[in-house]
Length: 173
Image 1 (cartoon, rainbow, N blue to C red):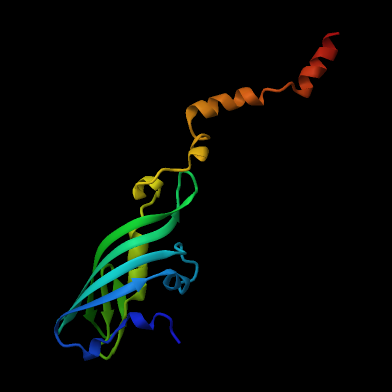
Image 2 (image 1 turned 30 degrees about the vertical axis):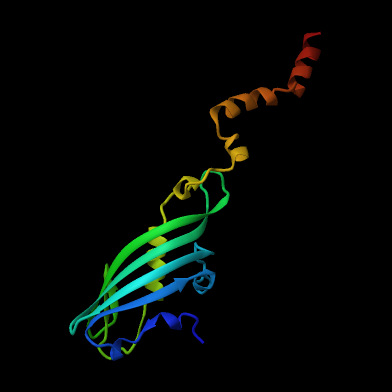
């Protein structure tokens, strides 16, 4: 059985007008996508599906958290996400996608929105993620290694007599 079947909209049975759907996204959702950059998450998706005779307008509102590693201290944390995305579905003889428009055939009975939700979640994640985005502090022990004072002090700690110094003393005798 398809684990993403609950994300299929019965488009052939809907009347023209506005329809609303709500989805809960959890870890199992991300597991169904091979090599997903997100492993864990807890998000709610509200979808407004506006059906017209010649096209469909889909408005997604995504809110929740995904589990990410901090790019500064490498500790995992729950990154809050919020995204609003729109998608148009139009009709054509050949199914294809172009930018924010998806073309489907008129004979299609269902429209699965799981892949679109998956992509919108990934697009909502910033290029760089840090604890600051979740109003949290990074690991203070790790941050000690990143401060300029710690970096300057380290070379002094590493100054030990080398083998070459001992050989120079022998040469000078």
